[in-house]
Length: 126
Image (cartoon, rainbow, N blue to C red; front, side, top):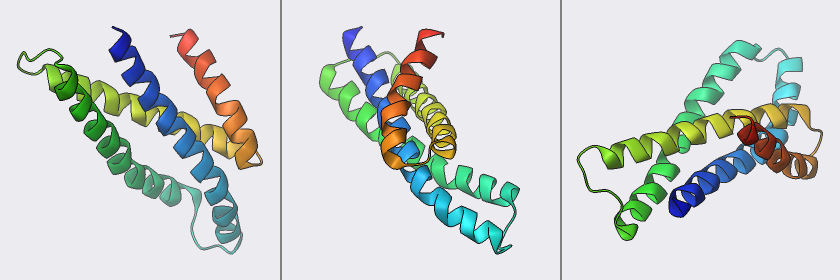
């Protein structure tokens, strides 16, 4: 159970911090481009989502697959798929939370300070 908890926390925090820091930096560029009328919010939002899905899936799958095999977790059919699916969904949810935090905070430093606290509060209520 401890290993599964570490896998879940690692996946969530990695995705959260990555999304928060990148979105705070990206937000400045997007705001400039939007002021120039280069694109509306909705196409940007969907492009961002489609760009994030592969990354939010690839890294949790790689680390989860390595962890699953090295630690000798349940070898029953379909169990590794369930494990990886949970990690991917968790990564995507954490990425969305990180983007939300990144949209609100003014600097990367404040995002890094606030994001883990928000994650703890969000996970405490689930």
